[in-house]
Length: 88
Image 1: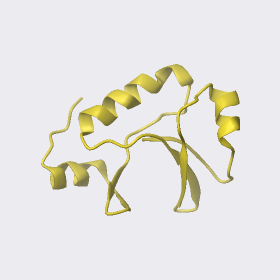
Image 2: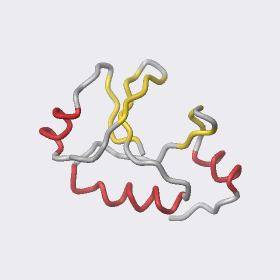
Image 3: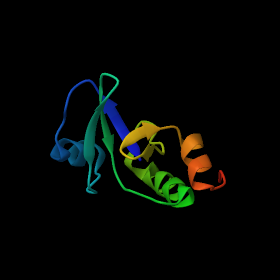
């Protein structure tokens, strides 16, 4: 679940102070951005529900991300690989 992206690294304490989010946050460098993610889910519906629950933190558009063996892929690719259905 990606919650933020920036061109510079910020601390977890900044995220807590600015957004009130106290959950775990990981960072990764991807396509010139520092991307901030939280959570890990095997089932798309669980990730989607988590994204929906983040609305109270005023993150600028959190969204579900997907990975295959550590490589970032599209959610559509992940759904096809895992034979799961898209859930609205």
